[in-house]
Length: 432
Ligand SMILES: [Zn+2]
Image (cartoon, rainbow, N blue to C red; front, side):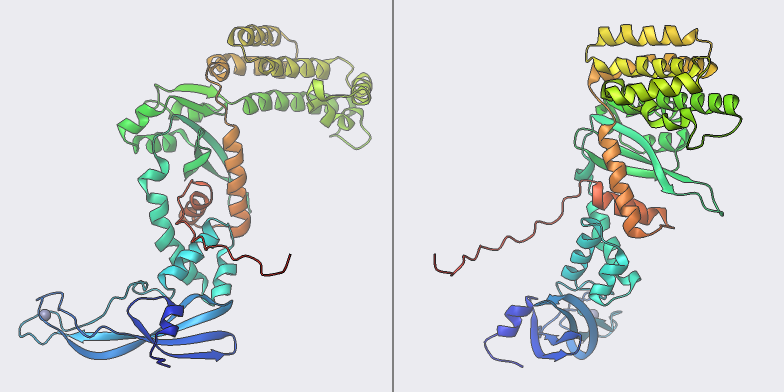
C-alpha cells in the first residue's frame, strides 16, 4: 500500500518505517511495515555492513481509531563480511521499538500509565491490548521503574511520616503482613515503603539514605510504637519526633473500649449483645464530646447509669476527653498544662487501663507536645494509606512485595509522568 505520498506513514508516526499494507481483520487492524534503512555499519569493526535478510516481528501498538492494532514489522538483519570480525549477523534497532518487547515503546508507556497513574488492574489493561499479564507487567517494570528510581522524585524531605498499613490480611497460611510507608509530609507523597514494621528494617532504610538527605530531615511523625522510635536512631536521631494526634487519640479510644468490654463482661458475664446498655452506647462513647447532641448525650448517660455500676467506663470516658483536650489548643504552654493534668489525673486512677494509658502518655510526653511545636502530623500518611488500599484492591491480592511497592510508588509516589500532548482545540461549527 505504498501511496507514494506517505499518508500511511504519517498515520503510523514511527520514523524510519514504510507501511506496506493495512488490513482490517475481525478484532484488530493489522499494519504491515518495514524499515527503510539501506546502510549500516558493523558495531564491532565499524566497516560497512550488508543487508542479509528480514525477520518478521509481531508487536502490539496503541489503538488505531479505537481499534486494537497489530504491527507486523519486517526488521532487517545485517551481516558483516569483514574477515576476522566477531560480529556475524545482527538485527537492527528501531526507534519506538524496545528489544524483546511485545509492546511498542509508546504502547508500553501507556500500559504503565494506565496501571500506575490510573491504578487499573494489570489484567484488565493486558486484555485491552490483547497481551498476557506477564507482557503488560514487563512493560510496567520497563517504563515504571525508571520513573520510581528517578532521584528527583524523592528530593529533599523536611518532614517525614512513618506509618504502618496492612499489606496482606491474615490467612490460614500466614498472619497479617504489614508494610511501612515513608511519606513526605510537605509534598504529601509516598517516597518509599518496605515490608514489615520492625525497628531493624527502619534503621536499615535510613542507613541507605545519603548523610546529606538524612540531615535535611527535621521532623519525623510517627505512631506511639516503640519500634519506630528506636528504629530512628542513630541515623535520624537529630530529627524532632512528633507523636501523631490521630494515634494519640486512638490510644485513648482503645483504652475506653477495653474498659467498656471488661465492665460489660464483669457485670453481665458475656460479651456485648445488641440489647446491652454499654454495647448500645459504644459508638457514642467514642464520639468527641463537642459532637454529641442533646439526644446522644442523654442516651450515653442512660447507658452508663444502667451498665456502669462503679463509674469505671465514665472514668475512662473522662480520661479520653482529657487526652483529646490537648488538641483543642494550638498553644504549646496550654497544651503542656492540659497534658500534664491528664497524665496526673490518670496516673492515680483506680481503673488499671487508665493508669496504663497515663504511663504511655508520659513516655511520649515530649513527642506529643512536639505536634504543637512543629505543627506536623501524620495526616497526609493516612491519605497515602488510602492510596495503597486502592492499589491493593486493583491488584486483587499481591504475592510479590516488589510488585506492590512499584505500583504504590507509581500511584502515590509523586512520579513525574510524561506530559500528555495537548492538542489544539477544535471549535464547534454549529450555528449560534
Ligand atoms: Zn564487523
